[in-house]
Image 1 (cartoon, rainbow, N blue to C red):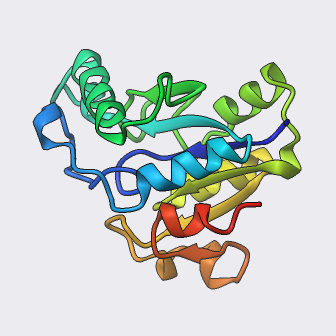
Image 2: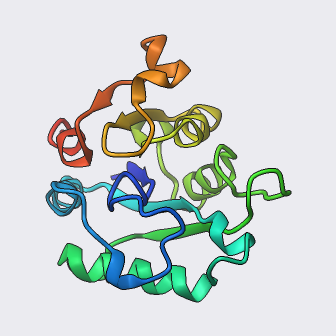
Length: 176
């Protein structure tokens, strides 16, 4: 299968704690594990794509982010590795970064590396940056209601170009 999901972390798979550095603060959003399990069963590759500006702001380290990711994977309870690849963009907004969403670079490089069909790829997230990265990469985008931003405030959602789901599990339930 040449299809994949690109998933935001905070507000999509785990509760957005804003600059989360302590693995003890990881709380899975209901439906995240079931959604990932379903995607895997259906043959989707799964990639984590997360902006972590707290690193660039000096609020926590890349190692803290790795520990948070490891705790999330442990809590998901799925066979390792949970993700086929992970992109962490550590720069804060306004600083040069080739990978910080809404940049599509990680998606585009991953599509090429894994010979994915862009028509069979989705970016799922809770922010304008997530949606923007998907659309800039030429893949489908889906928004979830589990983040800090109401999806209806996103221009692409308001224009009817991006579907909205209650959570990632609800999105994954629609996959075939």
